[in-house]
Structure formats: C-alpha cells, structure tokens
Image (cartoon, rainbow, N blue to C red):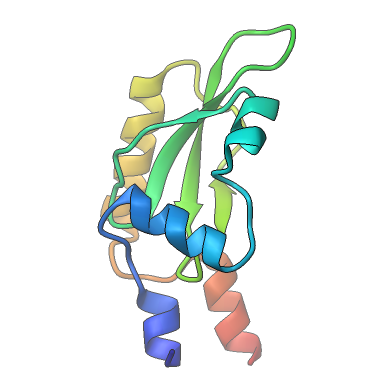
Length: 116
C-alpha cells in the first residue's frame, strides 16, 4: 500500500471498517468486546471514516462517542469519550467532522507521515 493509499483510504461501509480492523488483529468489533463495554454502534459512516458508538457504564446512563476509522482499520475516539447524551448530537458531530475534514488525514496519520 502506498503512502497516498494508506493516508487517504476511506471506507464505503462499516462492514469494510470491521474487516480492516480484524485484518490488523484488533478486536474493536468483536462480540465479546462489545458485550464487555455494553457497546453499540451506528451503521452510518460519515465521510467514509466517522461513526458513532454508545456505551453504558455499570451504574450510569448510555452515552455516545464519535469514533474515527483510520486508514489501516484501527479505531480512535474523536473528542471526549461518552461526550454526547443522545445519538442525534453525536451523529451531528460526526457529520460536522466529515464536512470539515473531508479528504484530510486524521491527526495521528498526519503526525506519522510528518515524522517518517
């Protein structure tokens, strides 16, 4: 994979993200991982890389987090973990990130390339 492909790959579906995540040996979407964290996620993929997950702590309400699928299939949190009280707010934040960072690299990807 060339640097251009590595740093600019965007996914068409969340299933592609899941496959890429598993192919690098990560377990973000594994059933046991999701169950352990009481996680759910939206199938909506904004800009080919942003999606929303929700988690419910043992003694608290479910809250929502914006996630970013990086080109290699790894998943990172964008913003604060469990920052949104409802799905609508988180989806709007993910859509805004897709609008403001439509073709750019994630912060981590940019730093990796700059330090290479």
